[in-house]
Length: 372
Image (cartoon, rainbow, N blue to C red):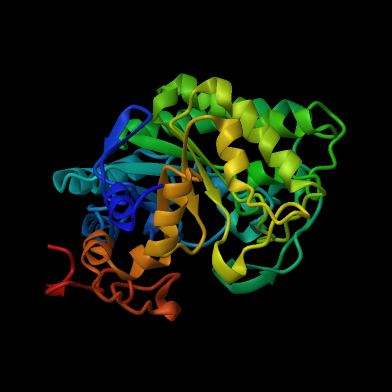
């Protein structure tokens, strides 16, 4: 057993994740902030935002759509144009100058979009023509989700290659790793779960078929940039974006096991801790340890962690690293604050999505504004 001090030290210890050495095991989770500029290009304001948080062992950026069709919200950055690559390059240079490491999150939202956000006003695409319940944020405000167009079998290989091409552009932009976004009800998650995938071709029906798209994407991305620079994110129990699955434990343990032979850098799992978490099984067991065992490599835990719960999941072996979302959003120097026991800033919730510097780059660090 670890003592508290030993576990605390472990959280701040360097660790190898795939091909990349990280200064500590504290990860900044990907968070959509809706502050990209014209052409979905990263802005100077984004450079400062990420630079301030460079003491994280790893920064996983907000999702960047791999194609124009992958966009689901206004003002989200892409990774498909030369201008976007140049914008991201300024961010990676600024973070690297402070000794930080970054992963770009590769994103395709699938059905979580609207024709007003799509090229030529076309319908969003998805595994199956099933509309999500609820509303989508558009430039003109909230609108009901539309019924997406089911992808033709022949189209899928092109999307797989789009992920690989986006990964290559990410590495060219200076990123150390890429993270395949297979969580939160977006395109890959829509293929994985039987509540959104009712296909009858080789990408639907059986569990092996529903996992196929994920495995093809991960394989193509690993071949493009090296398996040691690729991570994958899951949210097996999350109902966000109207998601459900008849047996999430079976689905996601099988998906994690299918990734194991690829030798990827990490698996990033969202499973809430504390009073908010709900289990995948009747016994109340946590799912993350089962995914860790099935995957066989580094695992990043996410889900409302505190310093104490982060220490606990490292101590039990549930995870190798822990990611923090809102805590990093509101505390550019979160690593120093956790290490010293300093009080955390209060997050400004109204500024989470969209806007300017307020609630973005103006959170104070210990001893003054920003993080120096």
